[in-house]
Image (tube, rainbow, N blue to C red; front, side, top):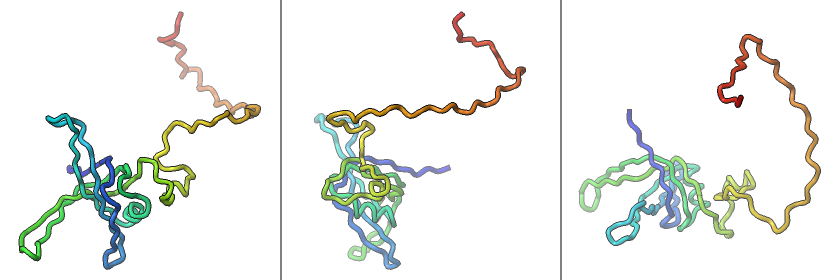
Length: 169
C-alpha cells in the first residue's frame, strides 16, 4: 500500500499565476510559505517554501479569490516532474504539490470579490466559530410552543435490564 498525501497551512508568497493548456484546461501556479514548529540555533523560526499546482475549478478559485499574503490550506499530493533543459541538455526535475483543494483561512480584504462559498452560503470565509457580538441583544419573543414528540413503543419486557450499576442506592 502507498500513501501520497500532503496538507499544508501557510501564506501565499505571490498572486496565483493562471494559464490554460492548449485543450483549454485551467492551471494555476502558487507559492506557499510554511513556518516550521521549532526554532533554529539563533532562536528564529525557519520557513519552507513550496510550489503548488492547481487544476480546473481549484485553479480558477485560487486565481479569482486568493492574493499574496492570504493564509490558505492546501490538501493534495506530491508529484515529481522531469524534463530536459533545452539550453544545457541536462535532465531537470522538480517536486510540486498538486492541490486537490485549496481553502482561504483568513478574512479576505473587503476589496476582493466574494468566493463561491460566501455567495452560496452567505457566510464569510474564515469566519470564527464565535458569533459576532452586538451592542444590544435582540428583543426576546416568547419561546415557540412545544409539541410532544411521538413516543416509541417500549421493548418487550424480557429485553429490559433494570439493573443500573451506576445508580446511587
